[in-house]
Image (cartoon, rainbow, N blue to C red; front, side, top):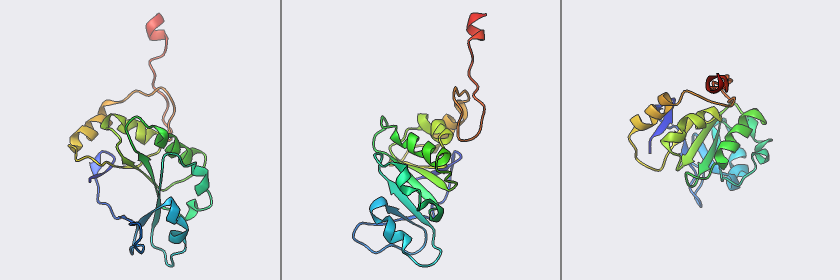
Length: 162
């Protein structure tokens, strides 16, 4: 599965922990249920955590200084809770690390993912990456501020009224 960053394929250095198996060496993403085990590892190997859409990101508050990645999940394209999780991680908890969108996000959502604080996207579908790149370039108007500290660029009412 490709990993996208800024509309480009990027290498993935992370390993995903497999249930019932010891944690792999190096950079590892653990499920929330195994976070304590990941935090107990010795050394300075990078640690990430994967959270389900129904998790309140505030439960990660004390672990965030040790985490380099938080993976948020889109179980279906209509489930937007991961957008809220990403934004809360950035704005309310001050997380500076990688936020990875996993599951079934759509290329049409790419710009909105970035605006909410997501840095990388890994989909379950083998798609043409140019579709994601095009979605990143084509959506240029936003009506609300983002975690990217951009100013909203809405059309405003003047254009319509006068």
